[in-house]
Length: 131
Image (tube, rainbow, N blue to C red; front, side):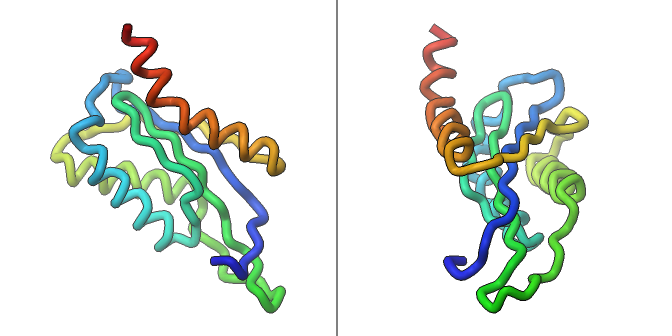
Protein backbone atom coordinates (compact mmCIF):
# COMPACT_ATOMS: atom_id res chain seq x y z
CA UNK A 1 0.00 0.00 0.00
CA UNK A 2 1.15 3.57 -0.42
CA UNK A 3 1.43 4.04 3.33
CA UNK A 4 3.84 1.19 4.02
CA UNK A 5 7.60 1.38 3.78
CA UNK A 6 9.34 -1.38 1.90
CA UNK A 7 12.45 -2.46 3.69
CA UNK A 8 13.34 -5.37 1.47
CA UNK A 9 12.92 -6.03 -2.25
CA UNK A 10 13.87 -9.44 -3.64
CA UNK A 11 14.43 -10.68 -7.19
CA UNK A 12 13.59 -14.38 -7.37
CA UNK A 13 14.00 -16.79 -10.28
CA UNK A 14 13.06 -20.43 -10.51
CA UNK A 15 12.79 -22.97 -13.30
CA UNK A 16 10.72 -25.99 -14.30
CA UNK A 17 12.22 -29.45 -14.06
CA UNK A 18 15.05 -29.92 -16.56
CA UNK A 19 14.53 -26.27 -17.63
CA UNK A 20 11.99 -27.42 -20.17
CA UNK A 21 9.89 -24.82 -22.01
CA UNK A 22 6.51 -25.89 -20.62
CA UNK A 23 5.17 -22.80 -18.83
CA UNK A 24 3.59 -20.86 -21.72
CA UNK A 25 0.19 -22.66 -21.58
CA UNK A 26 -0.03 -21.89 -17.85
CA UNK A 27 1.07 -18.22 -18.06
CA UNK A 28 -2.11 -16.44 -16.94
CA UNK A 29 -3.03 -19.00 -14.31
CA UNK A 30 0.52 -18.95 -12.89
CA UNK A 31 0.50 -15.15 -12.67
CA UNK A 32 -2.83 -15.12 -10.82
CA UNK A 33 -1.75 -17.83 -8.37
CA UNK A 34 1.66 -16.27 -7.69
CA UNK A 35 0.21 -12.81 -7.07
CA UNK A 36 -2.47 -14.22 -4.77
CA UNK A 37 -0.05 -16.23 -2.65
CA UNK A 38 2.39 -13.32 -2.37
CA UNK A 39 -0.34 -10.97 -1.15
CA UNK A 40 -1.70 -13.54 1.28
CA UNK A 41 1.78 -14.06 2.77
CA UNK A 42 2.65 -10.37 3.26
CA UNK A 43 4.58 -9.60 0.08
CA UNK A 44 3.75 -7.26 -2.78
CA UNK A 45 4.56 -8.24 -6.37
CA UNK A 46 6.55 -5.42 -8.00
CA UNK A 47 7.29 -7.35 -11.20
CA UNK A 48 6.40 -10.77 -12.55
CA UNK A 49 7.24 -12.46 -15.81
CA UNK A 50 6.47 -16.09 -16.57
CA UNK A 51 8.74 -17.18 -19.38
CA UNK A 52 8.41 -20.55 -21.17
CA UNK A 53 11.30 -21.97 -19.13
CA UNK A 54 11.59 -19.82 -15.99
CA UNK A 55 9.83 -17.33 -13.72
CA UNK A 56 11.09 -13.87 -12.68
CA UNK A 57 9.51 -12.27 -9.64
CA UNK A 58 10.28 -9.13 -7.64
CA UNK A 59 8.72 -9.23 -4.21
CA UNK A 60 8.58 -6.32 -1.77
CA UNK A 61 8.37 -7.12 1.90
CA UNK A 62 5.95 -4.78 3.65
CA UNK A 63 7.20 -4.35 7.15
CA UNK A 64 6.52 -0.90 8.61
CA UNK A 65 3.04 0.64 8.68
CA UNK A 66 2.13 4.34 8.44
CA UNK A 67 2.19 4.64 12.22
CA UNK A 68 5.81 3.37 12.21
CA UNK A 69 4.77 0.16 13.97
CA UNK A 70 5.92 -3.19 12.72
CA UNK A 71 3.39 -5.09 10.68
CA UNK A 72 3.25 -8.83 11.41
CA UNK A 73 6.26 -10.63 10.02
CA UNK A 74 5.55 -12.29 6.68
CA UNK A 75 5.92 -15.97 5.97
CA UNK A 76 9.61 -16.83 5.29
CA UNK A 77 10.51 -16.53 1.61
CA UNK A 78 11.45 -20.20 1.20
CA UNK A 79 8.02 -21.22 2.50
CA UNK A 80 6.30 -18.78 0.11
CA UNK A 81 8.20 -20.10 -2.93
CA UNK A 82 7.56 -23.70 -1.83
CA UNK A 83 3.84 -22.97 -1.58
CA UNK A 84 3.85 -21.23 -4.99
CA UNK A 85 5.51 -24.26 -6.56
CA UNK A 86 3.21 -26.75 -4.83
CA UNK A 87 -0.04 -24.99 -5.74
CA UNK A 88 0.94 -24.27 -9.34
CA UNK A 89 2.04 -27.89 -9.84
CA UNK A 90 -1.25 -29.09 -8.40
CA UNK A 91 -3.22 -26.78 -10.72
CA UNK A 92 -1.21 -27.97 -13.74
CA UNK A 93 -1.67 -31.60 -12.74
CA UNK A 94 2.06 -32.32 -13.04
CA UNK A 95 5.21 -31.75 -11.01
CA UNK A 96 6.49 -28.58 -12.70
CA UNK A 97 9.44 -27.29 -10.72
CA UNK A 98 13.13 -27.92 -10.17
CA UNK A 99 14.22 -27.81 -6.52
CA UNK A 100 15.53 -24.51 -5.19
CA UNK A 101 15.45 -20.96 -6.49
CA UNK A 102 17.75 -17.99 -7.05
CA UNK A 103 17.23 -14.86 -4.98
CA UNK A 104 18.93 -11.48 -4.99
CA UNK A 105 18.42 -8.66 -2.51
CA UNK A 106 17.71 -5.44 -4.39
CA UNK A 107 19.78 -2.87 -2.54
CA UNK A 108 18.60 0.49 -3.90
CA UNK A 109 16.35 2.26 -6.41
CA UNK A 110 18.91 1.99 -9.21
CA UNK A 111 19.23 -1.77 -8.70
CA UNK A 112 15.42 -2.06 -8.65
CA UNK A 113 15.13 -0.12 -11.91
CA UNK A 114 17.80 -2.30 -13.55
CA UNK A 115 16.17 -5.57 -12.47
CA UNK A 116 12.72 -4.36 -13.56
CA UNK A 117 14.13 -3.39 -16.97
CA UNK A 118 15.85 -6.78 -17.28
CA UNK A 119 12.56 -8.56 -16.51
CA UNK A 120 10.61 -6.35 -18.96
CA UNK A 121 13.17 -7.11 -21.70
CA UNK A 122 13.18 -10.84 -21.01
CA UNK A 123 10.36 -11.78 -23.45
CA UNK A 124 12.06 -9.89 -26.29
CA UNK A 125 15.41 -11.48 -25.46
CA UNK A 126 13.71 -14.89 -25.48
CA UNK A 127 12.39 -14.27 -29.02
CA UNK A 128 15.76 -13.00 -30.24
CA UNK A 129 17.62 -15.96 -28.75
CA UNK A 130 15.28 -18.40 -30.50
CA UNK A 131 15.97 -16.83 -33.92
